[in-house]
Image (cartoon, rainbow, N blue to C red; front, side):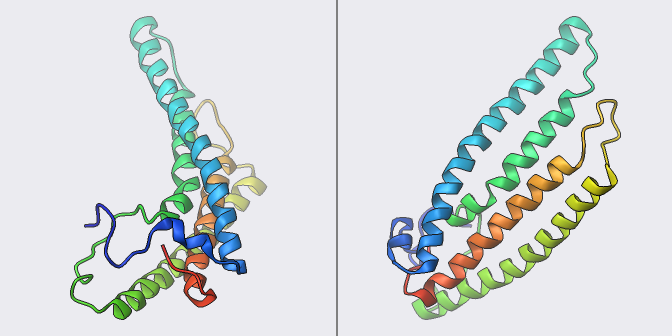
Length: 184
């Protein structure tokens, strides 16, 4: 597993040093991802607050809580999917790096590019299905099966938007080596 900088990876700071379109998009995504991370952190704190309130109100006042669990889940889904591009940009995901020391630097670059290309294909399919799900939920007016009945288009749209950002991030990382930039 990867828990820190690997010898076959460059510093993140050097990624957007280029002047081409891929580097400009990468810099723009970095700013957008930084903003999203702030809102995701707020969403996580809100989810914790909501769940704590739920537990306390149920235990102390025997109050019914029909909305708290779903609100917390919606916030967690949004925070998780919307920050996926940030995690990819910083290569913060867990990866098995058994071959790093065995392969040459060029072979490692090819391996990383192929892994990114395969990841993009999976994420593109997931994005397409997420947008389909969000559209159906919106058009059909689907709501959750709870007493609160919030529209399911909310979490599905957050999931689709987050996956779309992830796909753009992966595409930029696939294009950087061909555009003269260095990959993260």
